[in-house]
Amino acid sequence: MSIMERVKLTFTMAGRILNEVISFFVFTILDVLDFLLCYIYRVIDFIVEAEWKPCYCSSVKQTITSSGTILVSESKIVCLTSSSSSGNKLQLEEISDTLYTRSSLVSEVSKSTMNELKRLKLENAAPILKRGTLRSTFTVNSSIVEMLQGKIGGLKSNIVPRWSDCDCKTCNSWTASSKDSLFVHVDGAKENVQENVIFIHGFISSSEFWTETVFPNFTKATKSKYRLFAVDLLGFGRSPKPNESLYTLREHLDMIEKSVLEPYNVKSFHIVAHSLGCILALALAVKHPALIKSLTLLAPPYFPTPKGEEATQYMMRRIAPRRVWPVIAFGASLACWYEHVSRTICLLICKNHRLWEFLTKLITRNRIRTYLVDGFCCHTHNAAWHTLHNIICGTAGKIEGYLDMVKNRLKGEVTVIHGEDDELIPVECSYNVQSRVPRARVNVVKNKDHITIVVGRQQAFARELEEIWNNNSTSN
Image 1 (cartoon, rainbow, N blue to C red):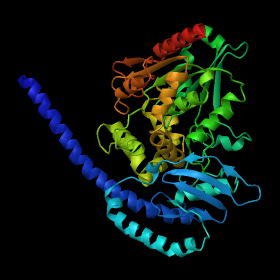
Image 2: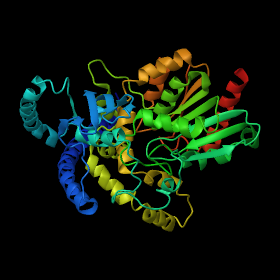
Image 3: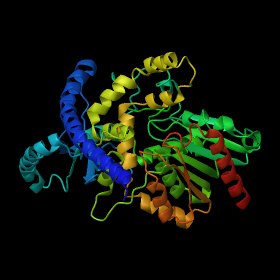
Image 4: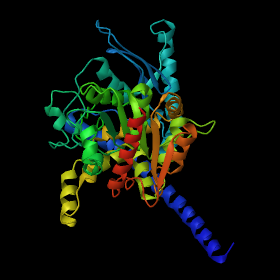
């Protein structure tokens, strides 16, 4: 080993150690801050809204309520029934345990106390169980109970934004519509449609990630043949942002089907998805394998779970490693580990996004378009928090099964594109996909990261998509 290589190795190790030490102190402070913010928000919520919504710091409570019965097993809602004469019943909903099980200094210190309180509560409830009042009861986080109670009762979505969410016309444009569907940008062929393409954006983004980049770069021939759909996912952009939604995989898929497949009578389609959208794309492909003509995934977050690990918790640690560097990993850690810190960030950024857009235009003298800022800011904390946990973390144990279904049942081409410099979702994820679907073609683009895999190379990306679609159109 040369002297230069030894020096480089020494600096690398020193940098890692420094990152570890600084991260420990920073995240310890954040653990305490999140604990304090929990009580601060309870007081403010009560003052402003005359009630406080339960958070995932709340203790568990019995799930047998006056409005219905909720039976749970670990992190899964097994059965949801109504006590009303209509007999409403919701199908299985899976809630990620990462919502309410995130180890921290504060949580570890208080865990023994909470376990003791839980034991005493169960002992007090034992006589009731013996009398046969309940056949079987479980416990679940109270925040989940509150939201599901609204669904049991058939309550209409609360369309009034919370005080900490933005109340501008853009963010709340969905409240003016009588349709309970996603915002869908439709481009391309209007008559004699030969093919359909559905674009699904990633986390805290919007349809503009596609419409402001690749859509203008498609050729006239492509736009005369293909009908292009770019959706704002539930809770993002100009789509509905219901306060009581848990933003589960089922809810996201149902809204895509209800907003695109059904109203536009889509009988077959290509899918293009980025980051978190790749999970929804795989789930959609598994649900409709005969309809899929091609599947293009950009930076898919697939980390195979080691034996003995809990898939949801392992995924959370991989995408949010509680490190201050790189910056994008620090941001992911804030969003994933801290319910109240992330709500504060949404309060400062999303509620005041018009100010940030103005400053961006002022500083750049209006020389750049702000669609990335728009997509980043136009969501609620409730939507981002639940989508992150219930989609990215909550589906971690399902991805292998989805990929096996894609390998065995999907006839169309599978293409995986990844930026070589992606610090959020490493390139290994794309090769992990290929290991489960050997025929998948992996394209690693040099000097591109999680965002610039599209932004900045939109013309080249448009040509790649056109080639994929044309190849599969010919073969089918």
